[in-house]
Length: 64
Image (cartoon, rainbow, N blue to C red; front, side):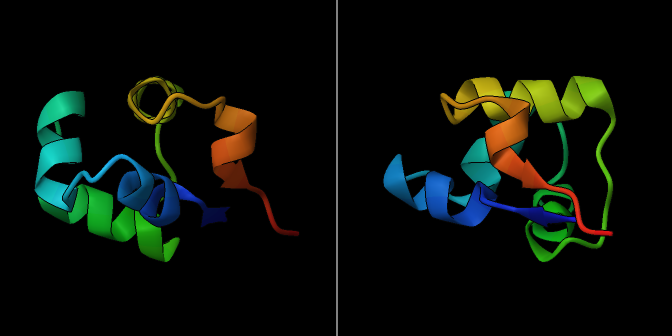
């Protein structure tokens, strides 16, 4: 799964640590999400999307 977290995070001048604090996870979780090494729960995906002012569908791209 690919995500646009890194590019949207940069748009809002948020560090990985900033985003992690806003959604209640560790910075490492954000790192793994950005690298596509972690599939988030629906709740986490929704929380990240809200902070980055986008939809879950726009934030994540599912690859087959």
